[in-house]
Length: 334
Image 1 (cartoon, one colour):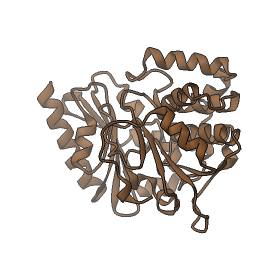
Image 2 (cartoon, one colour):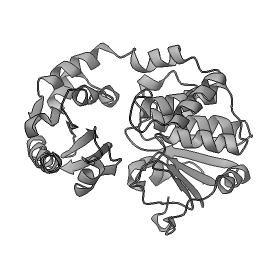
Image 3 (tube, rainbow, N blue to C red):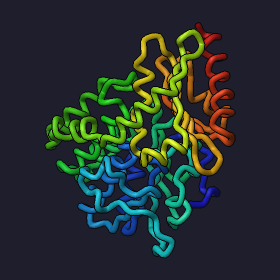
């Protein structure tokens, strides 16, 4: 994707404009961010399955491939790692990706003359030709439901299950403050389409490998409580990753154990990376502690209550710098 395609307009493209572009194209590539989550996968595969019913030739790319945790979702076999020898596409669609660089190899290798950018992150710089960013939506999957429904794109039980996965994972199973009345209405519509809530929820939240529990035990041993109990953090070193043979997907959701502590306003997860950087994930219980703003100071971004960054430095150095920045914000607002 060419960065020269970045839009200067703050106005969203309309759903009819986006649907028209989707219907006009034959070869379409759908991409999403590195270190993908349920919203990324669910959104990609829901749109891909819908477009395939229109007879489109659809490629679904993610640099990390399909994670084991999400191997049950319908259409998972369509998702592949990017390939350099793919012929140019008529249209590219970037989903749930706040920054173009977060597309990784999928963004670098996918060639298309026109791009659609659909996302719910407020820090999205609006790259692409047709752009729809809704920071009030709790998940990109919710935006796609509205697009599919309003534009009469195909919907069936498999598409509905992917959208349910997308919305459920990004709302903490419909628990986070970003969950709206409309989110529950959409959830009900997806159930009417054939989603088995019990089955999907068990596969998402009650089917973790043993190594994830062993990882949590290690992380809790590193736990730090700062700012008079308002900030909680733990860290993951490369040594522990190697010893436990941890996969990136094992980390998902573990930060919630910190956020669940009474009195904690901001939870932080530090993860040492091989390239001399530290991946920092933050979660906040209060909009007065805007973690997106904090992460932007370190080159990252996200939402007010959930954000992240990748910061160059050692694990110990990054911990001290970031915890000081968070404590300053929390103490100022307390």
